[in-house]
Image (cartoon, one colour):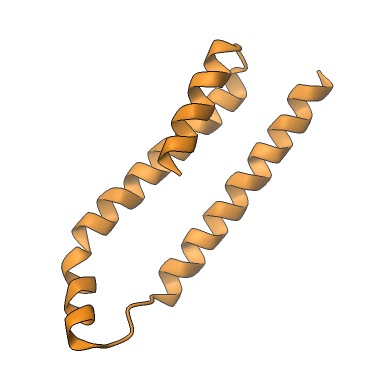
Length: 85
C-alpha cells in the first residue's frame, strides 16, 4: 500500500495531476500509520501466537477492507475524471 502510494504520487506529480498526487500522498500516510500501529501491537500478536489462540482481529480486518475499497474507489474515480478532462 505504501509503495503504490509513493509510485502514484510520483507519477501524478510528474504529470502535474495534483488531485491524484494528493490521493497518493494520503494513501502513503495511511499506510505509514498502519505500519506504526502494527509495530506498536506486535507484542499483542506475538503473545497470541505463542499461546496458540486466534490471531485474526475482526475489527482490524474490517478496517483494512473498508480502507482498501475506499482507496480503490477514489483511484477509479480520479482515473475517470482525469481521462475525461
